[in-house]
Length: 290
Image (cartoon, rainbow, N blue to C red):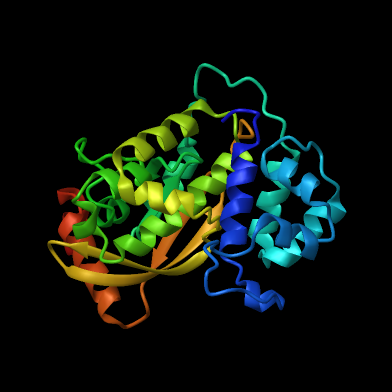
């Protein structure tokens, strides 16, 4: 994560590659070999000089104005998350990275909240996509988080552990989203050595990751539908809601993901069965007495 503008340049190149020249009213030749817009075409459409845009893409132009960034975002048709990411990359002046990654912790009270969600799988994920805490159903549906053999970093598990395809029937979609979330995290905290090490490891060992990373996508996952597969109850699909949790040390990125079944559906029945199957013996006795 150097101060050479590589992240900004990579993001701009990836975004202009997805813009069709025809959609901008430009005439193209069948012999055209460039995917998307050329540098000079983007500069012209954004009403900035080609030289300035080239320097911006190469990381040699510092502190571009809001007007320039807005013009580029308009031409590139960036959504709100992508616009924020562009501004962050353009404004950030990297400091010297700390030699030690910050530790991410979960408070005892938040762990109690997780334990109280007995009917809903829930996990807490940190800024580096580490699963920091979970309840019993969360552990079961996320591939056995209590098992020390399960890598608790969600990105490493998805890209480096073949068992992730068995755990998540929607693994490919999760992989795309995970890369986009990870890239956004790098833009927010470019000096975190833990993030740099994670990206380097995945780049070195996963061709799929390299391809998705080169696409330059960024996104925030707030809610939606996720698939799970468990040996005891089979495949089930759950709605999820993401709640952002402030950290006492001010670190960004912690989130509480809560998964909910549709009422009176197969997934609700499966979760109820799984909850009974995974309940400790003491809980089962209490249920029988009740």
